[in-house]
Length: 138
Length: 141
Length: 160
Image (tube, rainbow over all chains, first blue to last red; front, side, top):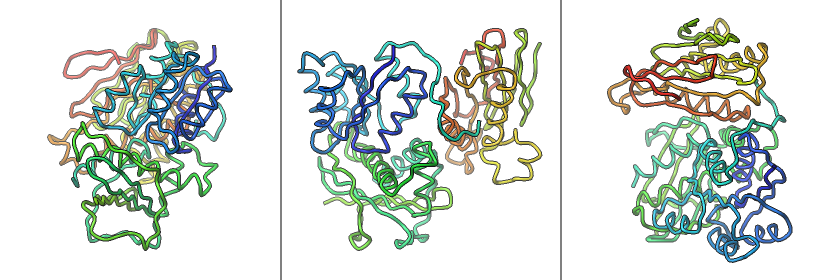
């Protein structure tokens, strides 16, 4: 089964780092949707089937915490596995977020840490890497 | 405060940029004409802004490292890369300075003109990063 | 058979009864790769991060440096039948053998690991598991029958 993924972060560079990590992690990734803020993310969730969301916290227009609240309140989306990927270092805020049933990854992160969190939350077994485009030394 | 700034900056350059930064002596300043600056404004226990200033020369290398990709490096993504670096350094440095329980709100990074770089920051971290320089300046209102 | 890998050296094996082993990894990195389907594995013992500091040495022995050695390791495994997407990579070493890490001016161990992570990221490879840093020396071995990697630190064995 391949996973459709939604990446929500106001930084295009960070969205691309997260996407690359997922694609080389051994997960079978289906469609990848990207959103710049919570509002865009909600629109995409309405129009597309998503199996996993990776969500930043500090974003303009609608922040990640509001987005997570809206997802958890919506009966169609309330069970969606969410990994928060954020610079947030405040213990108080991290506890507050974890109470919403999410995994938490702290930026900066090694790609291996993100891979482990995604395996854990989706319950998918380790697989093999599938990304094969690009310029390689080996 | 300075130590927290150094730690956050070094960690971020290592983990996100795959680079090896070391502390630099103050007399060896960055040439502001050949560098780029972004600012991240924040509110919380105290408010202010953090500025990341880095040599132009290292920006494409940083971007290629972070993205793991030597192609597709337009101006927009270069700005985005330095903005995200600043955002991550700021997000890590503030609770280290103010205390682990404090919550800060960070605004989106903005490019900063040279003329808007004010004097007398509350703390500076000066780094040598692989033959180039990077400074992190913290201003508190 | 036990196959010993020296400093700035590597060995590739396709034999189930081989154990690849390297001793005394300090700031050096030991890197194992293993394809569990083709049963191809390799171990390299690398000294320094980048070949550009001494291109003559790198030309004479690319296995000395992370940026030239790691591609050699992968390519040798491909030749023996391994496939990149199946290869499992593990890392040990990168220690700072000074008494106090702050006095270790060159931090070769740390540089080695950062350089390795950069190279792997650019080449779409993630590390399966690693044990790096600290201030002790490590012995690393790869069992070709199972792909199991064992670390020996201060006479205590752990599975990586």
